[in-house]
Every structure is written in structure tokens, then in C-alpha cells.
Amino acid sequence: MLAAAAIITGSTAMGQESPYFVTYDHHMEEPHHLEIAIQPVAGAPKEGNRFVGTATEFEFAPQAWWTTELYLDWQSTAREGSLYTGYRIENRFRLLMNEHAINPVLYIEYANTTGADKTLREIVGFDSWRDLAEPNSDTRLEREREIETKLILSGNRNGWNAVGNVIAEKNLAGEPWEFGYAFGVSRPLALAASPYRCSFCRENFTAGLEAYGGLGEQHARTLAGTAHYIAPCLSWAMPSGLTLKVSPSFGVTANSNRFLMRFGVSYEIPLTR
Amino acid sequence: MRKLLLILAFTACAQQRMTTQPQAADVAAGHKLFEQHCSSCHGVEARGTKYAPDLAAAHAMDSAELFRFVTDGNLRHGMPSWSRLPDQRRWQIVAYLKSL
Image 1 (cartoon, each protein chain N blue to C red):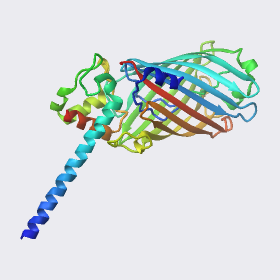
Image 2 (cartoon, rainbow over the protein chains, first blue to last red; image 1 turned 30 degrees about the vertical axis):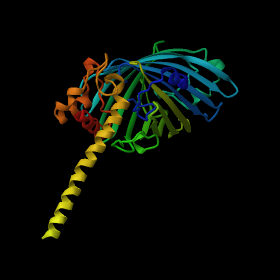
Image 3 (cartoon, rainbow over the protein chains, first blue to last red; image 1 turned 120 degrees about the vertical axis):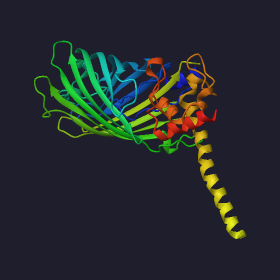
């Protein structure tokens, strides 16, 4: 799909994507550009079947301070088949119009998915590997209409980006608020650009580290029984307009998956030509 | 004496190269960054499109002011912030804009 977009549009804009998968920073999409991305995550729960959850993402900026995204979620589970698991619409609003040491962004998302969703875009409440071990035949019948909010605090200094997200999510079927967090730091491998167009030079790579996990729920705010992950991440922005990302994620508690492998491919299309 | 003058002249030439070469490289790198990140709205040679203005007058602006503008953008009027680029790259874009 991304290759077809490249051929059809014939024009590109080089993205400068952050390497994060779960953590959001304060950088917005540029107006008059559409970004299409696919972000699969592969995992093998301690019990149950191996899976790949995939989010197909369409990102657009109605304003320079407002970015909106539509996600279509899919998953494939070994010996169970593949299925569409729902959609999510998110909006991010920059609260301050100039660059500061810390830049707050408000994130609001509406998700209409099934219990079979395995995209793992955030970890909240008491999310656990056990949720992913349940068979699709059961979980696909669970409707999950959720509101998710995040406060994103992000800043840049000396080439480094440091960011923290506080997450609050509520299932609209009357379940309690669930909480989570995500932190990240990242830095390009070279700060200045070379005068030459290049694919493999250090300036096109950004490396980082993410940490994310659940913080319990409204009536039990605790770390006990929650899942937490540490994830190094790397992005590679190519002059063609494609950005590739990769992140091996390591679970650090008994309720985490032992290992998740995340990939990302994105392509930015200027709508100005 | 002649030897000393030759050494001084060589040193002066070397210093001039040290100060001019990075500037030329910065302008070239800034041009590349401009094509990658800015030209889709401002046009390939910064002459403007219906989405963003001509930047030909940017060379008359103070460098620090230009750097601040590239960093902050003008979010209310559609110009994105380019703080996602490291300081060094934003200065390279400024070097290119000053060369127009």
C-alpha cells in the first residue's frame, strides 16, 4: 500500500519521525501532508498462540497545532486466523503555541474495538499477557468502546528529546478508569546534516529508549499485578520519504509478555503538489 | 622576514578557508534540509506557493530571529514548528535562507 502511494503521488516529503512506538512527543504532523503508516507488533504469550497485531494509520494535521489520526486494527493469531478488530480516532492538541523547555500536548482518543485487538498501542490498568492468550472466538464478541486521554509532556535539549505520557482510559460500558504511563528519550545519531543526499548516513538514524506500563485503576492505583516494558527503538528516515522503525520490547514483570517485537513503516505524502 | 610574512600569509589563508568552508557546507546542507522539509509548501527554490509565502526576503532577517521562527513556527497560521530537528540542522536551514 505504501509503495503504491509512492508511485501514485510521485512526490515525497522526508519525515523526521521519532523512533517511539508507544510514547508520544509534542511534534505534530505538518499541515497539507498525509502520513500513512503500518505498525505491526509480534508476540508469543507465555501460554496461547503467537500473534501479530497491526495498526494501519492515517495521520493528518487540520492545523499546525492539531493532529488527527485514524487507525484500523487487525490481528493474526497462529491456528486461529486473521480478523479486523476495530478502529480508533485520536486527536492531539498542542497547548502552547511556542517552543518551551517542556511542551504540553493533550491527547484524546475514541476507540471502537473488540476484545481481540492486539495492537498494544498502550499498556494500562492490569493489562497482562493473559489477555492475549484468550482465543479469538471468545474475545471477538467483546465490544470495547473506550475513551483514552493522555497528557504528553515533551522537550528537546542538545539534540535529545525527553518525553513523559500519563494515560487515563475508560471503557464506556461503565468500567473504572485505568491508568498507565510511557517515558522515552531519543537522539539522532548525528546532529548536523551532511551537504549530500544520503541514505545510510548517521543523520538519518534516531535511537531511543522507551519504558511503559500499567498503573492500576480508579479503585486500585498500584504497581502490583501490572505489566511493564523496556524497549530500545531505532528509526531510519530515507530520502525517498519512507521511514522504518524497529523496537524489541522486553517485559520486566510477571504479568508482562516476555518479549514483543515492533516494526513500523511510514510514508509521508505532501498534498501540495 | 620574508619567511615570517609567508607563514603569516599561509596562516591567514588557512584561517579564511576554515571559516568559509563550513559556511558553504552549511548552506549546502541547509539547502538539502530545505528540500526535504520545507519545499513542499514553500516551493523548491523558496519562491512560495499558494500554501506558504516566498522566502526571498528572509536573507534580510536577523539570523537569531530566523532560527527562532524555524524553531517555533507560527502554529496559528499554519507554519509548523521544526524543533524536531536538532539545533545544528535548524542553523543550517538558516544559513541557506540567508544565502538566498
